[in-house]
Amino acid sequence: MAITQPAVSRLIRDLQAEIGLRLIDRSAGKLTPTADAVALFQGVQRSYQRLDRVAQAAAQIGSPTSCSSRRFRSRFARWWPRAQACRFSIP
Image (tube, rainbow, N blue to C red; front, side):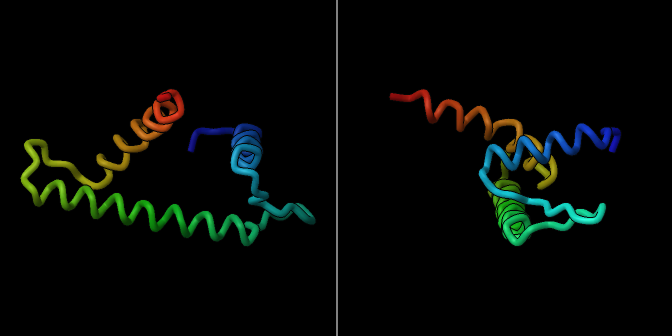
């Protein structure tokens, strides 16, 4: 993955602070996902499946640029944070 363990720990800590959920239980040197983490993961999986269906629908409509679901998710992931930032700045 080319990311250090301290960087991963920091990312997890920042995510937990941002969403207000504890995602990892640490005990005896082991990391275990919490029930909240499992539920969040399942929700994210469902979201990706829906995005795949949107990409497939776009391809079936005959979009001028063919779009694989992976490319669509990548573009969506870059676009979505900017869209959310705009949502909060509109009066």
